[in-house]
Amino acid sequence: MPKTRYDELTWPEMREAISRQPVVILPFGAVEDHGPHLPLNSDNIIVETLCLEAARQAPDDMLVMPLIAYGLDEHHMDFPGTISVDMQTLIDYVADVAGSAARHGFSHILIVNGHGSNAPIADLAARSVVLETGVVCGAMSPNAAVDPALAEPTLSDMRRSGPGGVAHAGEYETAMMLYLRPDLVQMDKAVREMGQLKRRFFNWDHPEPSALSWQDWWSRMSESGICGDPTVATAEFGQALFETTVRNLVQFIRDFRSLPLRSRRDRHSSHSGEVTPWSS
Ligand SMILES: [Zn+2]
Image 1 (cartoon, protein in one colour):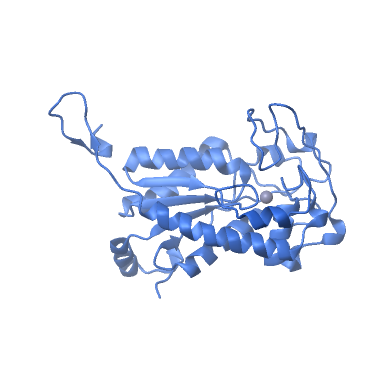
Image 2 (tube, helix red, strand yellow):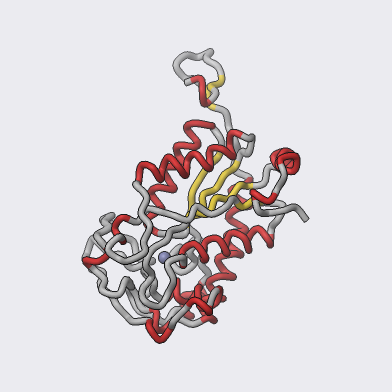
C-alpha cells in the first residue's frame, strides 16, 4: 500500500509518486476560539482527520501534505489564543506550498479547507497556482452539514439544532469533535448562543444562501465565541457527518483527479501556437 502522507516519502519514493500522479491534498486549518467547550485546534483536527481518513480509504488516489495550521483570523483576535496571519501573506504562503508540488510535476493539487474564513484565501491561492504553473489546482471545504453536494438526505434528519445552530462551534463542529476527540470536549461548558443576524439579504446560517458577503469582528456578535447550538450535539451525529463527508470526499477527489489538463492556445492570430504558463 503506498504511503499517503506527503512528507513521509523519501525523495526517490516521491519521484515514483509523481509518475503515478495522485492528487496532492493540502489541508488548511486555523487556531482560533471555539467557545468555552472546544479547543483552539478544532478546525485543524477536523480537516486533517477527514483528509487522512479519505487517503486511508483511497491510498492510490491521494497524498496528504502537512496541514497549514494557521488561517485568516484577525476577526477572532479579541478571543485569547487565536493566531492571525495577514491575508496577503496567507494567499502567497498557501500558493507557494501548493505551487511547490506543481513545480515537482504533480498535475492535480487540491486545497482542502477546514475554516470558513479561509475559503476566499484558498480560492485565490489555487487560482494563483493555476496561473503560475498551469496545473489543475482547486479548493474546497468539506462540510457535509452545510454543503448539499457533500451531504446525504439522512443527515438533515439527524440534525437537532434549528436555524443558526450549525454555524461556528455549534452543532456541527461539536458533534465532529465528540466523535473524533471526545477527550477535548467539555460539554458541561457548551452554551447555545445565536448572535448572528438574519436578514432578508444576509444570512450566515448554513446551509441557506446569502446575497451579502460580510464577516464582522467576532466579539461584536458572540459572548462565548459560539455562534450556534452545541448543546444538542452528539457523537452519533458526528460519526454520521464524518463518515458521509469522507465517503463523498473520496468521490470528489477521484473526480477531481480525472479533470483534464488542457493546453492554452494563443488566439491572437489563426496560426498562433500553444502557450506555456511562463511564456505569456
Ligand atoms: Zn471551526
